[in-house]
Image 1 (cartoon, rainbow, N blue to C red):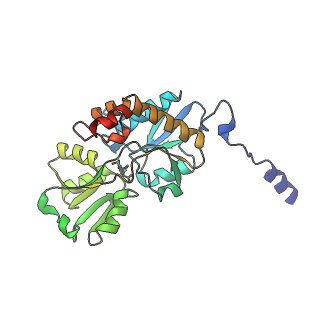
Image 2: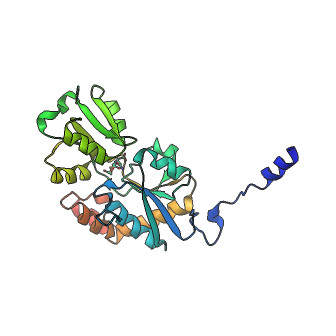
Length: 267
Ligand SMILES: NC(=O)CC[C@H](NC[C@@]1(O)OC[C@@H](O)[C@@H](O)[C@@H]1O)C(=O)O
């Protein structure tokens, strides 16, 4: 057994896939990128009426990967709570789902540079449903498991009764049936739900210190660098601005992602 073990141990491949010329980005399947995403985070990432993934994050990602010469991109919907682990253990090449970059998450995956800085929103049926002044004490607050909202609520709303959901759709139906008093999610998604159902934005909390990034398996520097280059190019030539205004009409433009020439204009 020892001899066999030695032989097997000796043949572990030391070079990563990305070393091979036909797979410069170390993709699970050369030439195509598999993406873990979520289907109900409109308008960041969601599946439209024909089941196609689209939204700001999705269309930006497609633009960025096209610049790297990768045109075959397949999106799969997953529960957010398992998304980073799935990228980390290389079930998917990338995670794309308005994923805020944090040191804690960097223990599990690497991130591209940031591409979207916005707000976390407490969404309720009406103003009287919860008291933000009392840090939502005594209220049933929905959060999607594994999100920054969950972490923030544990730290800042200790007296609230947290109800954890696998995704926003489940939380929103609980909010609409009254089994929770409020749901805590991303600002642009809250806005979409407010338009769809008669709901109220109770509070917008800035999350600029955790801009969204694309998640890749730790160590896949070739892919991460290609995504960074594509992001920088998309920001500099105005593609980022175009997509932002298409998907988040009326929302304030964050200068750091605009073409350099436009960044000083506003100042
Ligand atoms: N898929 C989700 O529900 C993501 C929820 C949550 N997104 C936070 C965030 O990345 O959303 C986009 C921007 O507003 C970022 O500033 C923010 O941290 C998170 O990263 O946990």
